[in-house]
Image 1: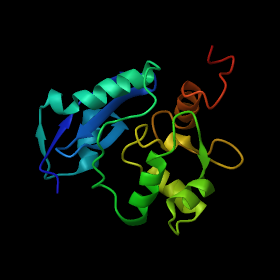
Image 2: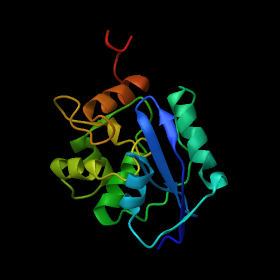
Image 3: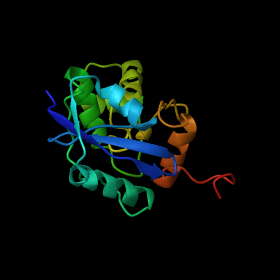
Image 4: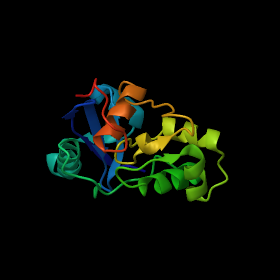
Length: 172
């Protein structure tokens, strides 16, 4: 189990992100501020103030949003996931910048028995969005859903930022 976790806040074009980093690596990333991040991890985890521990993910997120980073190197702590969910998220982690897969394609890539509809549930509960890029999973007939930030508009922004979608007049 986690012994300690350090938090940071990162201002981004899609809102304030809060990464949570254990001794092993990035365990959670999300919107909603520090209170929500603490609640997401539950009780019994000692919080430490350790800017050195969070420095890599903060720098990488800032570089990503500046258009200077295409692949995150931050170590991942997968302990909030298990079983098929972990297998699917690890397959998702290998989907490259600027590309997208459908829910069904991700099911196939993961080698799991999870059907496309189940992939959607896993994406909705992804504890490490952006770094484990659930925004890169789309429906066969459109963008599909997104539970982070401002929902599908955040997904659209991220996919446009990565060059998968073309900007609209509203983005210019």
